[in-house]
Image (cartoon, rainbow, N blue to C red):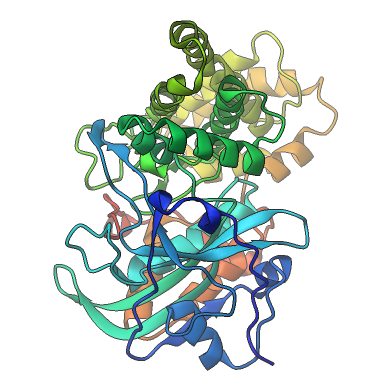
Length: 473
C-alpha cells in the first residue's frame, strides 16, 4: 500500500499573486515521530504501514500525487506594527482535501524549507516547537476548541542553527484554511481591489456561504472569534502572539508558539518571551481580538459600494463585539461552576470566585475541576476564603438539575501544562519520545479521571515553573 492523499485543490487556482509556487526542500534523513491515523481517516488519506514512506511524504522529501505546493502571501500587524509583507516563511501548503465529513481542509508542511517570504530565515523548525504544537493543538481539539490539528511530526536528521545547534523537524498541520486577517490586509494595503474582491469571494464561498456581502462576512468572523477567545479564557489558555497574521477567517486557533495554559490564576499572566508589555496577556485577549477585527473591517471597506456608510456600519459591528465576548465568557464560566443558565447574581458569583482564586494563588484548572468533587478548598492557601464563597454557591446550585455533571464535562481534569511540555521536549532531545506519546494519549481524553495520569494533573513545583514560552522561529 502506498500513501495516497485525495487532493482537491482550490487555493492554487487563485491568481499567482496570492502565493508563490515552491516545493519543500528535501532533508537528510527523515524519520517518523508520530502520525495521526484517526485524523488521516477523516481526511480520506490512505496511510501505509511503512513509516519510512510516511516520513518521506511528511518531511517534504517526496511530493504525493496531486499536490500543488505553494507558500501563501499575507501581511499583518505584529505587536501593533504593520508589516506590509509577511507570508509563509517556513510553511508550504501541499493542497486540500474534502474529508469524510464534507469539510475542506488544508494540509501544510511547517518547517519545510525556505520560501520567497523567509526574510533571510532558513525556513526550518526545530524539534521542540513541532512537538509543542502537535501536543497542544491536539489537546485543544479534544477540549472542543476550534483549532488547527496535527497530522504528523517527522525528524529531519539535520541540525539547524538557533542559539545553538538543535535537531530539525517538520510538522504537518491541518486547517479549515490558512486565510488570515493579514491575507486581506496585504491586498487592501496595496490597493489591489481586484485581488481583494477575489479573496472575499473565495473566503465567502469556503467559510461563509450565506454571507450576502462583506459586512455579513465580517459579522460571521466577529462571532466566531468572539466565541473562540472566550473559550480560550475559560480554559486558562493564553495564545501569546495574537498578531493579525495569526488570526484566521475560519475562526480556528492557529500558531502555537509562545502559548501557555495558566497554572495559578492570574488575570495579568503573560508567558510569551517577546511580549514585553503584556499586549497578549490572558485578560488582554478579549480587547486584542476586537482590535484585530477592526483591522479586518478596515481591509474590507474598499469592497463596499459606499465607503463612508461602510465605516459607520463596520464601526458599529466592531463596537458590539465586546458584548458578544462577555456573553460567551459568562456563559462558559457559569457552566464551570455548575450553572446551566445564568440569572441575576451569577456573574458576581463567578467574579468573586476568581478574585479569591487570584488572592490565594489557586490553580486554575484544578480548582474548577475540584468543585464537583467537594475538594476545591484544598486549592486555597486560606481555605476559609473559599468557605465564605461556597455558602452562596451551594445555595445557588439548589436550583440546578445536574450541576456536578455539567462541571465535569466543562472543566478538564488535565491540560498540557507548561512544565510537562518542557519535560517532554527535553526527553525527545535525548531520543526518548515516550513522554510525547503519553501526553498525547492522556490529553485526548481531558475530561476523564484517569488515576494513572495523576502526575500530569499536578501543578509545577517552584523549580519546575516555566516563566516564559518562546516563539519557534
